[in-house]
Image: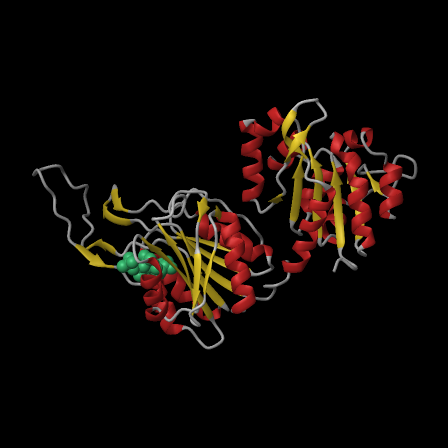
Length: 399
Ligand code: CTP
């Protein structure tokens, strides 16, 4: 599976660097082409000769080689690779890649790379649990980097806890997985709706809901990781996602969301509608801030367009459509009705009856229903894992 795949392996200066020799061997055995870039500190932990011998390529270390005056082109290295893996990733190099520093060859290559990047952090437990490290990890994740979390165990400091680099076999498996799914959706264009909608009452107030947008953004990320081009139509959220194949269109209201979907849906291969669209909006939006007067205030609401229903009516035979159903009771029965009424190919059900599922949480518990009355139930997982399960279902059944 890895035959001919081009992998850049970035090695930074942590004790776990010595284990990278095993990773290089695993990759080479499977036929991958490996080029290793070492930061200055990493050669204290693994010798450039070891890296070069195992990878059958030079151990890239500096922008230019003093002996022969040769310059290493970080841009062409970045363009050469199908995948970049940085392992171990120390707290220091993590901070640098999170904030765009490029004072060594590895960092400059990271900034120039067009391919996906996977990192395996490794550091002492206090450093790993520090807020700054967590923020930096979350920042690079938002920029599309895949993180293989550090594991628990004995650390070089003598302490025990979370911070050990994932084992070379785990990193290898993740790389294999990437190549297994990385091109599954290549050439496909997918439209995704995410987040809440805000329906204006007056210039300073709106009707909204607690949707965080996490689920839709995780789905968008998974589609991008599998090679798709994504149009993400997002209501107001705190989520961030950057990717060269992503077109992010920010909207506020259901009507705005509908307009964007209407202008893009026809050219898409499929749609995943995860937005929590407000079913109603104020019938009239006041031009001025509503002043406090009587003890009660009555707002008249009018129905919003059902965006997913619209897409279901437009759907051609070649297109597929997946919706969500958030239910509080009789989840399967209600979701089955929505699946049929909205002319969907599948519906992802989550219910607020399940602890940890639905709005705001980092976790979700989903069931996927399809037109053949199949119901696939998943345990409570992270939204990231739930997104993977949804994408596995789509690629196996709909694409
Ligand atoms: N949806 C939509 N436009 C709307 C309402 C919902 O596109 N105006 C989409 C959602 O993105 C989701 C699916 O329809 O994929 C189901 O949303 P949900 O709120 O569960 O269902 P509703 O059809 O609104 O029904 P109800 O609120 O009565 O349960």
